[in-house]
View 1 (cartoon, one colour):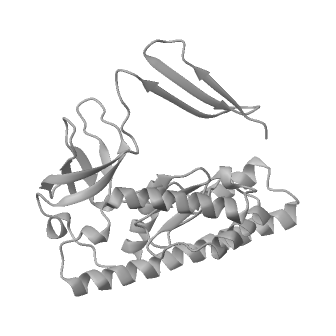
View 2: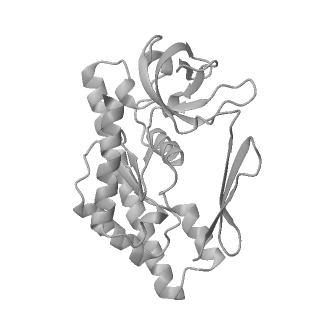
Length: 267
């Protein structure tokens, strides 16, 4: 599908970018020169206080307002619990991620079935069904689904005051910018966008394929390519729509470049 990119820099204080297909606007972004956007930026922060009633922590990451870190956005590596308990928790989380992968494969089979029965999945009804059931959502949605599964399978749920401590150092990423009197929303589940993929360096075996890629043959081809690429076990990858029809070398190079960027963050 042909797409056009429009850039409006006529206003002295704001630049607007629109990605438009034939029928509708795909994406819209803007940047105000007087208000720098910190969304997706990564910072090293320090927990300033724990709020048990909110099951959240406030993090000082260098801005005027401290950021808001919900407990669901704290990965278990930061839990201040005995080593054996942490290892057990990681093992249980790993088992759940395998269940997520199995669910993803079953969705691909559903897409294949729709192709065989209807000859196409281009109808609005089919696309709505696929988007509703598959799990290759943005990272925040995947984390939400993962936490829902943790409740379902009765994995021990700690309280935030049991596992985090004031003055603890955490590496965070901004999910939502500051609004009004509210501080920015933060997460410890980092995601780094490459040209064709999104790397999740601290989400082991997470990821998959963009939900906008709905053709079963395309998804099967991408999965085959991903199986041939050496991705560290501690990391996950989501292939973006821009990765459609790219070769193994293209995806491999893009993922390796993003991993090298992550290595600079960790130094």
